[in-house]
Image 1 (spheres, one colour):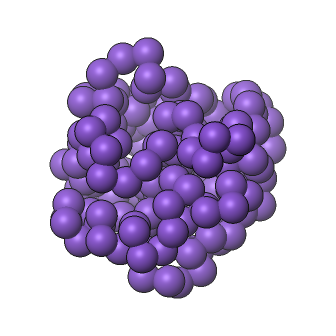
Image 2 (tube, helix red, strand yellow):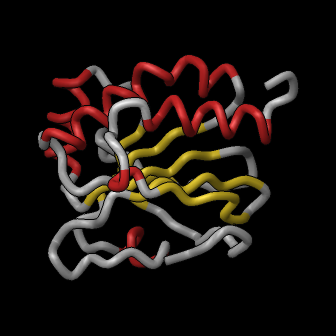
Length: 150
């Protein structure tokens, strides 16, 4: 798994609308990997990021969710949950593998990467705690580190 200080990988994936997204990771970015759409913890985490999204955007921080689900499943999930940020479809595991995550089981572990200035700044393992409140903790850390006036 990529660690803080590692260069951000070049990635490209389709979002829930079938549009190709290629983040550059120069500006503060949160990229959270989750195992699967429509599952308990993943739904809690997605809702949590959506709830905090206005504050992320206010700070100029982009949020992406990534799982090995396909575009159609992401579209249904985003619609049902009212998600207004991009969910990147990674059915072949290319994006997850670029970040050093295991895809052998057809899903990834839950991990959140904070990137800025073209590198990994921090990595979170939300599996060790309740996914509820994870987005708020990440927001607090990112705002304190990268946003003027925190």
